Length: 352
Ligand SMILES: Cc1cc2nc3c(=O)[nH]c(=O)nc-3n(C[C@H](O)[C@H](O)[C@H](O)COP(=O)(O)OP(=O)(O)OC[C@H]3O[C@@H](n4cnc5c(N)ncnc54)[C@H](O)[C@@H]3O)c2cc1C
Image 1 (cartoon, rainbow, N blue to C red):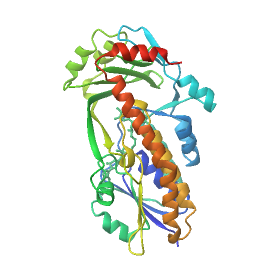
Image 2: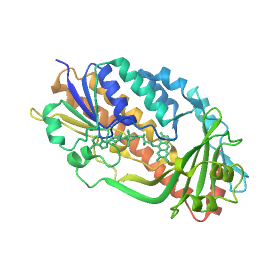
Image 3: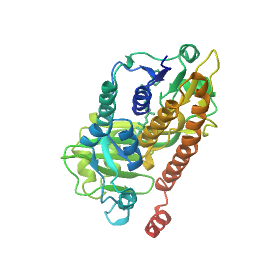
Image 4: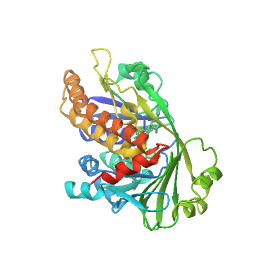
C-alpha cells in the first residue's frame, strides 16, 4: 500500500515537497490555512542548483518559461559609483548556466502546474493544522512546510529555536518600467536593490530601520542615484509590501523526528527548518533543495520501517548545508546594515 504523507503549508517548500513525494509514489495531502494560493510576492533569485532541483521535480519547463537571467549587477554607493560586482558571472561560469529571477507567483504556478500533472494530491485550502499529534497518528510522515512560525516545529521540536527579529524592515515592490541599472546600493544603515523580473518591469527592495510609512522611505532615499527616487515616486505605495526581517535562532539540532508504530515521522523543510534573512537571496532556493532531497530520500523507503533511515539521510544532506547558508545570510545582513560604511566599502572593494 502507498505510504501516506501530510504536508502542512502550501508555500514554495510545501508544494515542492508534495510534488516530489507524489512523484515518488506516496499518497499526499496538503493542508493550507489560506483560502487560496497566494498571488503576491516579488522576485526570487534561483541559483543553478535550485534550478536543477526544480527540473528533477518535473517543474522545470514552466519555471523556465517565466524566469529571466540575472547578469551585470553591481554594488554601488548612494551617489551611483560602483564598489564591486555581484558574483553572478562567476556563478554562471562555474555552473554553465545563469542565476535566474522569477516572481513568487510564477514559481508557485510552475509548482502547482506540475502537481496537477502528477495528479491525485488532496489539496485542502482553508485548513489550519493545529493538532500535529493527530496528524502523526494518521500518516506515515508529517512534513512541516508551515513557514517561520511553524506549528509543526513548535509541537515536535520545542520552542527553543524560534523566529527572532533582526531589527530591519524591508519594503518590496515592482515598478512598471525597466531600470537601466541592476544590483544593490549600500548606504549607512540602509540599502536598496533593483533586479529584473520580467520585460518592462523592475523588482525593487529597500531596507532601513525605524521606517513606518512610505513617505519616510521616499525621503530616506531621495538623494540616491537614478532610478531609485523615480522608482519610489512612480509606484503606488498600496502595492508595496512591508516586512519585518526575521530569522530562526538558534539553529535546530535536527530537521527530523523518527516515528514509531503509533506515530508517523516528522520532517521540516524551508523556512520552518531554517528561516533566514533575505540578504543572500537563498530562502526559496534552500526550500527547493530541501523538498527535492526529502522526496528523494523518501523514495527509497518502500516500507514504513525504512522511513527513519530515509529521514536521517535527508537531515544529513540538508541540515548543515542550509544552516551554513542561513548563517552567511545573517552575517551579510550585519555587514550591509552597518552605520559605518567606510570600512565596509573598503573591504568590498578588495573582493575579486
Ligand atoms: C524581502 C524578501 C526577499 C526575498 N528574496 C528571496 C530571493 O531573492 N530568493 C529566495 O530564494 N528567497 C527569497 N526570500 C525568501 C522566501 O520568500 C522564503 O524563504 C521561501 O519562499 C520559503 O518558503 P516556505 O514555503 O518555507 O514558507 P512560506 O512561504 O512562509 O509558506 C508557508 C505556508 O504555510 C502556511 N501555514 C502556516 N501555518 C500553517 C498551519 N498551521 N496550517 C496550515 N498552513 C499553514 C502559510 O499560510 C504559508 O502558505 C525573500 C523573502 C523576503 C521577505
